[in-house]
Image (spheres, rainbow, N blue to C red):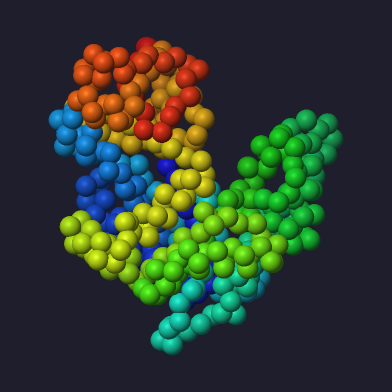
Length: 365
């Protein structure tokens, strides 16, 4: 699996500038990994991972394949989008299968960029959320009540539809509706936009980056006053214009600039890290002479399902997993040195994968 993020926001909030920064990273990524299929509104970028070059040096390979994040951008939404206003509504289907919705909120002042919406970041977010609710309501209104001899699964699905529809009619997002476990499971097939986890990018100017903690706290407090639940960890302050410029620099120049600005990493790197945390994702590593690669899995994934991320057939043919923690693997010089020090374990089907596990799966025929 890979992380996918749908980007939404009003026009002129900096979505295009942010996406251009992603596209610059994508172009470099695609040059190295031409297998990536890239569409005009999709940015596929590597997850920054300092572990991979170190692993590659240990196992003597030059091929490094990082995990990736897919960003899906749509035209800016406006009030009335659900009734056909603007262009954004036409593209909502593009983000229905993403893992998380990223709201880009304007937090900069620029007389050269036309202000859309109210100018209040929270009110602008609420405008977008309302349009997403109305789009979800339109999806639910297309669902039909089962008749005749009704199967249990159909009955559960219709119950979920009724609960969700009632809530959305009352202006309540799908994520806040209490459903049974079975209803929750079947409701995923509806791909409702407001059922997805949400995050926020506060797009500021370059000066606003330095006071990001306070800016985030104020924004979350303002959301809370409007009845919107959000954590400070759901928010990232980014200067999209700066990110676009940084994406064009080589690694050395980028690090020099970040150090001069007192930053440890780019805003995009912070965003990706926050999204992993939000969705409860970790990565395990494979390291051999052919390649070093990072694989994305949810927290709590067991060995066979982790193997299935590499190839679906591996799930049923899983025998065991040879596991070593990344730190031990690096310190002891690879599989041989780690095994000699007793740092390599053989784990079975019940093993729960841990972040930074270096793994070699034993697969039967």
